[in-house]
Length: 588
Image (cartoon, rainbow, N blue to C red; front, top):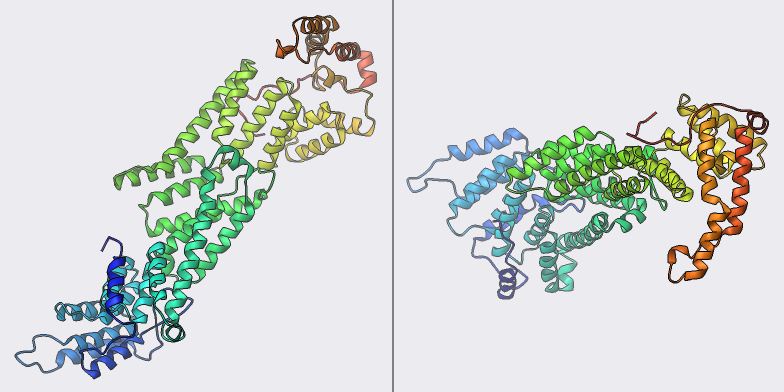
């Protein structure tokens, strides 16, 4: 039965039938037998599936019972066993763990009743089918039982459990509330206690899952919100909540639709925190461990259903987090194929593939623009790539993007922005040697020599052969102990390995920029036309500052261009350059 349960029909039955079951037309002995058989499925608050009572009946007893039934003398008018006898054999099969046999005998008994099926038989077969992981068929059976006997507390309790395991929580909550409204206090304290307990679980699980999945779905909100919120605490709480609900299920029940939903929630929580958040983030080792756990969950789900697109999709996300991009692309292709086999497409997979392609394209455009020294275009491309990579699933790729953009910021003389990108790159990948060295260079420019030494020392331990690192490290150590009056390299925008030709070129550039005549003319123009009419000239009245900077630039050039004075100011001399262009990002 694929449709939802008819709530109105259930309510009409409740109105026509008193809560306390009326005397049945069956014989007294049959009623007692059915009540005794119903004890097969006592309620265990830790399980959502009916659990058989302990029994001493061994498996061979089933065969004996069947043989005895088959050997019974039959009259001409007795072509088959009675429903009661078939039910008894089914009960014996259930007690011994032969659930397929129990299902077969219950089905035969129901067929033999020809339109007057007992609700107890439907209920018992439902419990048996739960043992066989036939979740939907079990729900169909218990719905039939409930229609025939809506006032039976055990039938209603099983109905609620079947709805839970079939992941039909809203229906379960609604039906339980309708039933609970009509219960007296005496009934609530007596036979209806198991039903009340499962009703509470349904309501609790529905509310908790709604909240948890709302948090997980927020990862698809606006970019700004996603970057600002990397709630590791929320992810831990979701994992704990899913584990708590999974512990209430048996191993078999974890494969039910409800169990699958919980496991999907858990693996999504493992991948939920956005790496590199300033507010909260996992350590690199724990982030890797969570990605491995998510991958393990997806592989378990694929073993149960290898054709489910969602499992392939989330396996791909876990693989990307583990920097296994080629395997991730293959998993995404499988997700697409599985969705096509089911007659549709997997939107999340399509969006993820589009995003990955966009990141790669913009990164390559940014690298090419950097090579041609088109700084504004390079920054624009890296901005687009970083925006498309808002979830930062591949932390190495994300770190490369921010490290490359830091180089562009440096070329645009935006040191604070460059530093911010390098901080983030190192939060993402603490062992990223190139980002570590570049941040050390920026610290040198800012005359923060102690912090530069710290970065260079870490980089030297991890990547001792990094080009130019030894020179930077030596200068940083010396200047941390005896800081120079001014960092002439930084004044001219040079590295400590600058050649005479580079020094002359940098001097010409900086002298042109800070020449007093240029700033005096700009200040006069701004005063003549008014800053309000020319917003670009509002802050050009910097003649005094320009004159001071021009003197510093001249002094720096005089010292660095004279080998003797440069050697006196800094005993170290070598050749090289500062940041260089990122090109195709490489990992030392």
